[in-house]
Length: 187
Image (cartoon, rainbow, N blue to C red; front, side):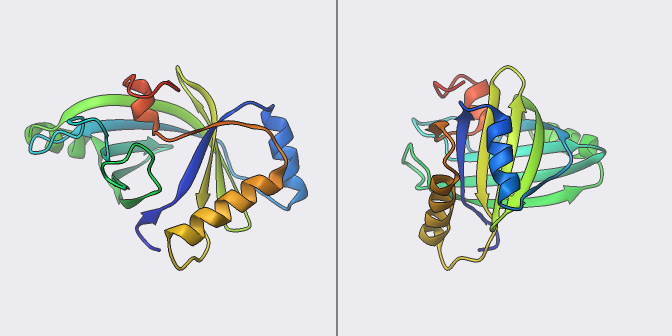
């Protein structure tokens, strides 16, 4: 499922240490904590914010001296609750050059999401513990294993979460840019 992302996001209700302890007993190991600064852009030829449902994002991520360009298109396109997305991401050597290129092409900056992320991996699932400036603490579960289709990957994430026995907040069906722009009530 290359270029397809399947994930679920929750606001953390339980203390983060409780979930991390549960993950440790399952053999998970923490990665290094990193600061990620994501700048989101709107396209001049197609307004990503037009319409009731936002289904596309373009961003530049800067993290610990490296940068990437990322485009996501969430499906189903016109539905508020998304199941997966096409995700195209590539490292870039010079974020400022890409930023200037986008500006020259009349792309406009929408919002910046500044977060600290600690990623854990276990059983084909990547867990990202995010502290997002101005929004709070969240956990994302992203499928990284082998699956035949989106439904199989979604079922694996759901089973993994249910097997944790840890109270999570309500599932959030939106990205951090939705929240920083005030387009989702979880923001």
